[in-house]
Length: 393
Image 1 (cartoon, rainbow, N blue to C red):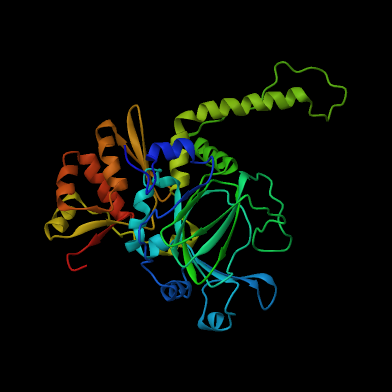
Image 2 (cartoon, rainbow, N blue to C red):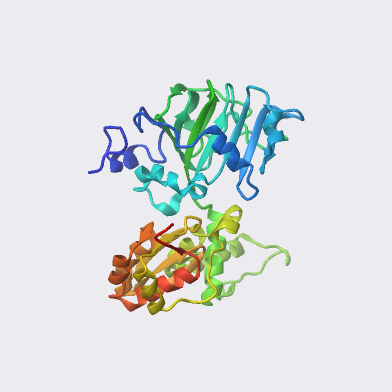
């Protein structure tokens, strides 16, 4: 079984013992690690208009815990004090695809669960305050040293400071304290309070995993029911009893409604995977501008064959999310909130079309053994999920 980073755990043992259960400190998870990008590189990304970034100042000019949303400017950086501030840039794994290798050790967790690689830079005493997150996160120290204080038990109803853009806890008492050096990783499950403070100039890579909320999934299921013409049963009350007050909604009515909604969920069972797939592959609003790579026309199989013969390859669009599922009669591929159906013969190719980063001419010839899989790739090219890269690229 595959070892999990630099630990005595297998990947499955990590999932069984730690995932969404308790924190784990991994010393030298990446041995002799050196950050592949510099603080100046990160600042340059934060100055780009389309890239999501934030500057957090604990002792800002205008207020405590001042937040400045990007794009940032040289003026923003020139006014900063030498300490007590933090720069954060989201989705660096997409803006700099050469950093995607850092995600490889975590791919035993489904890709559709992963959110992004966020990178932060902070000088001495830089922090975003004690807080909790609603998602799993691996915190890789990439440069300098950072002190992490954590609580041993999750907080479900955290009390936060009023009037701040940041969700900072009003009270925090650490149970454990660790100083992380480059290459060290701290894994934190959801809702475990933590407080990180830079001990010197440093960078932290945060690999976050998202999970849909119940209310979001209910909305997605309702949309699926409407699309399929399901869930049309109306409220009914053949057991109706006389009531004392004719405007009252009594407990019996509430119980009937509960049963009706349960039946609607049961009716939706065949479309639950589809609702989940569409939801988790939706493109973040902040990335939409980068993901618009669709073509005007649907390429034919002959056109794709010719393109491959010219030694071009296909690169998966890193700004699009992919997922797939199988069922008794076939399967579905999901990309950017859309679904694509295949019958049972095409299911075996869905992993290639979703998981691979590059498709070569050899891959194409393999897909040609199933015409629907070849046609699906043509459609994905037209929809911007796969992008041609010439030999010179």
